[in-house]
Image (tube, rainbow, N blue to C red):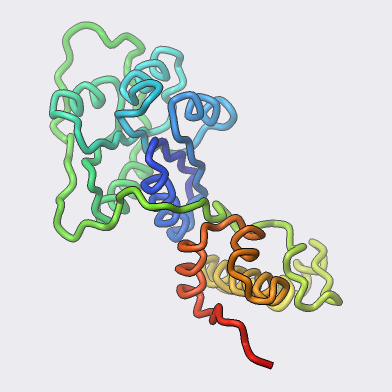
Length: 250
């Protein structure tokens, strides 16, 4: 799966895109402005960047142009905007954007675009953005039918990948979880590793949240603090995993 950098100043959009892409098996890193995007790009090259155009510190097209001029545009970049004009989309494509998504973004459009862009060979544009250029005709906008809720919501980050540390899995302290033991047994604690990643991840998260619920006596406030999930998102995650968050009577 791919390492994807999502750059958007709206936390709800960042977190929702992260959750959708995470569920597809991708590793997702978030940046809320151009400065954070620069740092993330220099730290490690992502396989794909989803880049918003309008942000408080600078616009995404300027960052795209900067990466191109510095020779850093060696990964596909998909521009996102709910207010950009066709001229802006064409300009971004001319500089080197691989595609363009218009907000609100449909679930199908997002997943299809990500899949298609990741499969394309990377073609570096010329560093100079002056002179004549015939813009490609493949600039696309999203169909607004069946739109997913890519809109500002209060949320906090979910895990961008299944943790390699299993210190939280303490429901059976006697279980050995060393690397060699895991490779020999095919189990991570009680979780069989011979299954699809998504299923294994769900089982880990189920054990993880049940552990914290028991430890905090089903206090959702404390579980929220311990897990780093805002309460609304925490309730939704528990429902998704089929976990009853109510305190059981003795």
